Amino acid sequence: MIPRYSRPEMTAIWSPESKFRIWFEIEAHAADKMAALGVIPKEAAEKVWTAKDVEFDIERIDAIEREVKHDVIAFLTHLSEIVGPEARFVHQGMTSSDVLDTCFNVQLVKASDLLLADLDKLLAALKTRAYEHKDTITIGRSHGIHAEPTTFGLKLAQAYAEMDRNRARLVAAREEIATCAISGAVGTFANIDPAVEAHVAAKLGLEVEPVSTQVIPRDRHAMFFATLGVIASSVERIATEVRHLQRTEVLEAEEYFSPGQKGSSAMPHKRNPILTENLTGLARMVRSYAMPAMENVALWHERDISHSSVERMIGPDATVTLDFALVRLTGVIEKLLVYPETMMTNMNKFRGLVHSQRVLLALTQAGVSREDSYRLVQRNAMRVWEEGKDFLTELRADADVTAALDEATLEGLFDLGHHTKHVDTIFARVFGE
Image (cartoon, rainbow, N blue to C red; front, side, top):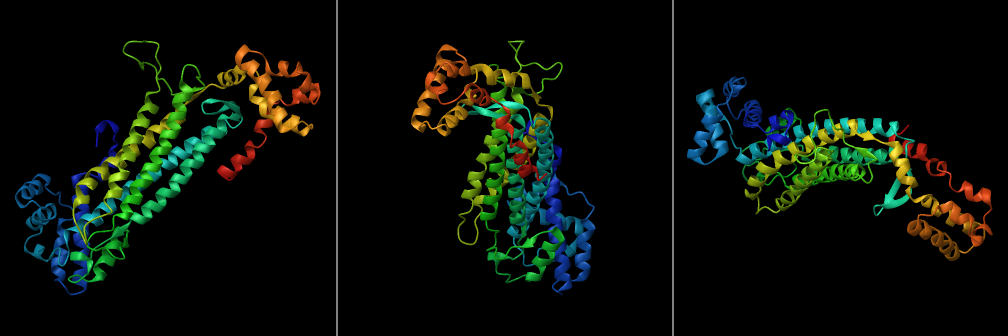
């Protein structure tokens, strides 16, 4: 985790203090159920909870681990120093993965909740700006080239629909990752009652893992991190759109440039899209974490720890980075500067070419073959491209065109309203209103 791209709410989930607190809760809840089953004395389970409000000594745990070379044993040793002799009943029939995997999933669930809140704020911002510019006409582009008119609100509505799908994906990924395993060595429950697992799961808000083989199956985690990668890709898509629109030659929208902000150490005139460029880079990192998560699926037999080092990195890094990116993107959308006049100027740069399809269709409906209609429209369009002519003027002067289409019909084909007549229908589909 890099502090520059981190927010305290998310980093707190991955702190040693948070991790050890979750480990403690797993062990304490398990002890409660073992006591209820008569496996350990009730007094011992109660004594374990005396550590509930104690701050664990991170340095002491680290010192023990340096000697024993095992993090869970180091924690249990430190816990025994706090609890006393009754700590010998802690961890009865459990294995390290029961603690580690259940804790990791608790952390991922907590991270998911923050990410879902981030998405909700982003969706709200996209919706607000989409309605603000529902009827702001702009040019749509395919291959980076002028295509036909659309509205800037539709661009934002599309981003909203995409992020809404991502939210649904994250809800599903959260549900899939929210499992608990307290099944002992190789997952057989040989030395621990399945009721202990069910009790711990209920206390932590998780579901029991149907079959854990000592570790929770990593296909769940692969899906989780893949989902984060898809969300990051959507962040990048929106960021890339803003970056293109901010180019000097386009300048239809741009990131907010605050008073006192500097764009370049060398060129005082610069207003660069630094936030969306940053988001593009962060998205690349989040996506990169999906691949090792997929490679973690293939563990040896019932358990190995080849996944462990990977997850110690990608768990915090992927969630912290995506959290930061979503919050940053929300700020970009909320403060985005939009220039409708420039949009109209750009659309008219090639003097009516954006209406070429309407002319083509009108000619076919007037009885001209599609092949001839395409040829007639294209030869006039090329004069606009190559000589800077006006498209409607050229069409009026083309006898083959006017033989099929009269003056009033031709002029009517250049009505921008034709391209926006179904905007309300699309908005109703996206926003349900």
